[in-house]
Amino acid sequence: MADYDFDVLVIGAGPGGYVAAIRAAQLGLRTACAESRETLGGTCLNVGCIPSKALLHASELFEEAANGKLASLGIEATATLNLDQMHASRKDAVKGLTGGIEYLFKKNKVEWLKGAAAFTGKDSVKVGEREVRAKNIVIATGSSVTPLPGVAIDETVIVSSTGALELAKVPGHLVVIGGGVIGLELGSVWKRLGAKVTVVEYLDQLLPGMDAEVRKEAAKIFKKQGLELRLSTKVTKAEASGGKATLTVEPAAGGTPETIEADAVLVAIGRRPNTDGLALGKAGLTANAKGQIEVGHEFETNVPGIWAIGDVTPGPMLAHKAEDEGIAVAENIAGLTGIVNHDVIPSVVYTTPEIAGVGLSEELAKERGAIKVGKFPMMANSRAKTNHEPEGFVKVIADAETDRVLGVWMIASVAGTMIAQAAQAMEFGATSEDIAYTCHAHPTHAEAFKEAAMAVTGKPIHV
Ligand code: FAD
Ligand code: NAI
Image 1 (cartoon, protein in one colour):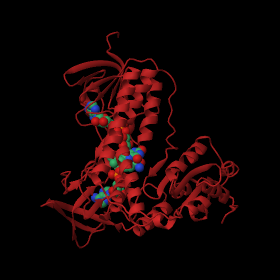
Image 2 (tube, protein in one colour; image 1 turned 180 degrees about the horizontal axis):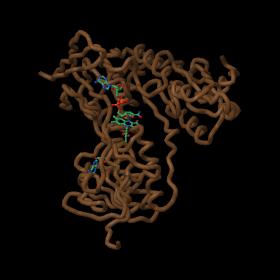
Image 3 (cartoon, rainbow, N blue to C red; image 1 turned 135 degrees about the vertical axis):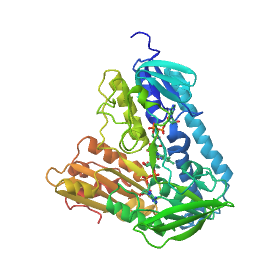
């Protein structure tokens, strides 16, 4: 029908939605993007990846100066925390990047429809007072914090990740509920700035979903850094009163409860998809039992012309996954072939050292068939050793028969940067031998990856 207002309407301007909108416009489609937040960029730019990395970077530098780490390199420094300025720098990063997306929308002629969108039909959506029709609608509404029964978030004493990015002073004791990515990243920030940090994790190990050896080593490193880890423990209640909180915890398997006093509590037990208020039913859509919108290989839902990407769909809740799906969905709508290889999505925890992985964990790879594993310690990498960054290792998991790389895991100061090479190698179908015979610049941390690949066939040089 000719009376569509847009070829493509994207709901949500996070890394999934804004990328989809820009790519659709680049492909010549009349595109709009509805966003209810005051600024573009979604969770990632406003209250997620970017502000957390701003604080991780600043707090790492503070700690290096404050605790004498620099002294061993011959740099005598004293450090005084100016938390207001640290927050100002974080806000400045967010402002610059969210403003950048607004500029890109204008440049690519993507119309920003300001307000919350709700379906009124299969091809129509109401945004604020305006109703628009679009030939294609992409749901990219992202996710928000999963609440914990018995723990009311007030964003002052009991906070979500959003409140934890904005604490006005360093808490004396911060209790983090959940030993996942958010808990460890933001727990590390406040630990470095002087808080005592206790992480309460329901499971018997941190970082579910990652390689078991990496999880174990990470726990060792965080303990050494002074994080108190209460594994196999559940929080049954947390109450705030008079600017403090009291938590009730007990063994995950059941047992005697105890109380913990805290100055701040961070609830970080996962995120859940945003579909409330979308009126999915009006479009003939339903969410699955986890609240996600199911899609096929091309990101189309079971209603033709309605597509979904990013955190609101199944799979890891990561900005780069959402972005790649944004490009792919726009290309599919334009009649091209948009593909995302969900087997090769790297994940990174931006602590010190960084923790990263791509592909199968050793446990999962073993379940699927015979494997060979090569490992190389960062202690034996000349650059890491010289920089006083000896912690961690790189591990390459390859198919025993074909030698094709199935997974790569690493703990290293710059693992977040190193993992890109592993992802690219896997995307190209590399064998461990391909990596072992690729010339790597010396001295770099990346040489540890080459040596781990050499170790798959038992031939590293430096151990
Ligand atoms: P979102 O970014 O959540 O964006 C969805 C947008 O849709 C939001 O702006 C929302 O306001 C809008 N919206 C929702 N409903 C409607 C509606 N009805 N109408 C109009 N607009 C609507 N991932 C990484 O890869 N690396 C990291 O380092 C990282 N760090 C993180 C740190 C924190 C503290 C958090 C919370 C998350 C982090 N993530 C990180 C995860 C990452 O932010 C998400 O995976 C990513 O933002 C998902 O993108 P998305 O586009 O699917 O959704
Ligand atoms: P998560 O899923 O990473 O970790 C949640 C943790 O809480 C798990 O270890 C889980 O076992 C534990 N848990 C659940 N219920 C509990 C309970 N009642 N008591 C104690 N522990 C409990 O979720 P998180 O950290 O909230 O992060 C949400 C999402 O945001 C993740 O999917 C992640 O991908 C994304 N993210 C990514 C980042 C990155 O890529 N660097 C950084 C921050 C977030």
